[in-house]
Image 1 (cartoon, one colour):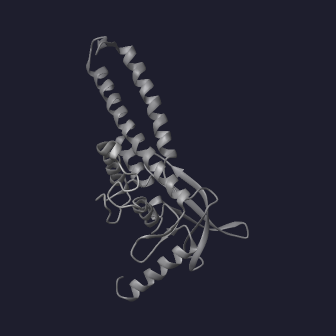
Image 2: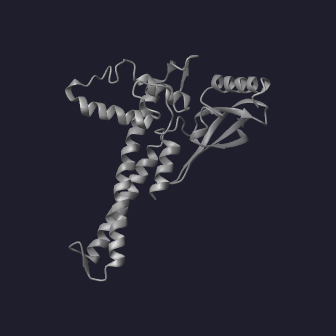
Image 3: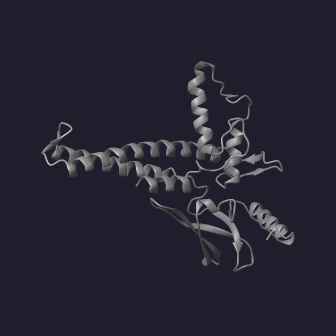
Length: 244
């Protein structure tokens, strides 16, 4: 179960998104947030919300990673710095990432406790262990499993997606041989994967259907037509230059 939940977090909530060089020395968003919390704890009242790592504008390091990863709508300049960003969506994404990290931590603790109780119940031939009756242990396992299911549901809701049913996304259409606008029709979230389905609509009918994962945002699926066309132009240049 632990491995499946960790995979869900990696695929959905953006904590594993890579970051460019930053003052925190973090390689991922998750590491950056961890360093931020540790710095707050260690510095206490001396902590600077404006310059936690020495320079101001530290939140833009996170925004840049979200934009590059396709989680937030925005634009980076030629040096990789934030030129434009949807602050509301980007801040919501960061909050969801933080919530999912702590949900994962709680799930790990519960998984260990459930495994311990089951192991003791299956190996102990007496009617009691750890001062509790076998029946009490069964009730405790049932309680933990219910809470575990609740946390998994919270984690699933915390999956960070920059779209929802009805949202427009843009991708290369082999049917139209061009960048096309698709409308998200369904989002499927399980313990092992997150998948999005979108349709290219023509005269109120779905002419072409595509499936993709959150990892595809910023690579083959984009939030704006300009982003999609710029990526396709860059891909064409690289192929012309012999990078294929």
